[in-house]
Image (cartoon, rainbow, N blue to C red):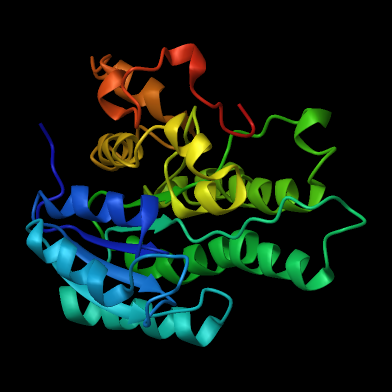
Length: 276
C-alpha cells in the first residue's frame, strides 16, 4: 500500500481537530508536517497549540515544523511556505483545513463575523493554494485537499446561514476551478467532507455540546479517508468531492462503527453533517 513516507504536508489549522488528526496519520508513515496555525498559547475553550501538536506528530513518528500562521495574511503564508520548503526540501501536499463557522442568519451575523469566515475559509484557501503551487509543481505526486463540502446548490443549505454556506462553498469552488486549471501540472485538487458530525471543538461549542458529540464520529475517519486520497495518483484522481465513508468503502473498509464516539448507537442515530 502506498504511504506518505518522506512526503511534506503543509496543513492549515493543524493544531487540533481534523487537521491534527490528518497530520498524525501522515506522521505514522514518517511524513514531515508543517503546522500552520495561530494558536501559540492554550485557549480556554480550545485544546492544543502548534507546539503541543508538534509533540504529538513527532510521537506518532513524523517530523514537525510549528509555524505561527494566520491564513488571512499573505506575507505570513508566503513566509511559512518558504520556511517549510527550506526545512524539508519542498512541499508535496497542501491541506486547506483552517475554517471559521458562524451559523447566524442574515440579520444577525455581524460584518466582522462575515468577513472572518470569508477571509479564513474562501480567501485563506485560495491564498494558501496560490502560494503552494510553485512548490507543488516540483513534487512527484502533488495534492491539494480542501476540507469543504460538495456543491449541493439546494435552498435548504443557504436559507438559515447563507454567510457560512457561501464561505464554505467558496473553498469547494476552488477545487472546481483549480483542478482543471492545474491539470497539466499534475496537481490534484480534491475536497473531503464528513457524512456525519465529527467530534471536534467546533461541534461541541457551536452545534450542541456533549449530546451532539455522542452522535458524532471521531476525527480518525477523516484522517483515514484523507490518507487514502493523498496516496492516490494525482494525475488520475482530481476534481472530486469526496465523502469520508465513501472513500473508505471504496477501499474495502466497511466497519464504520469503529469511528463512532458512542459505539452503541445505530448508524441512523448519528447526526448528519451540513451539506449532505
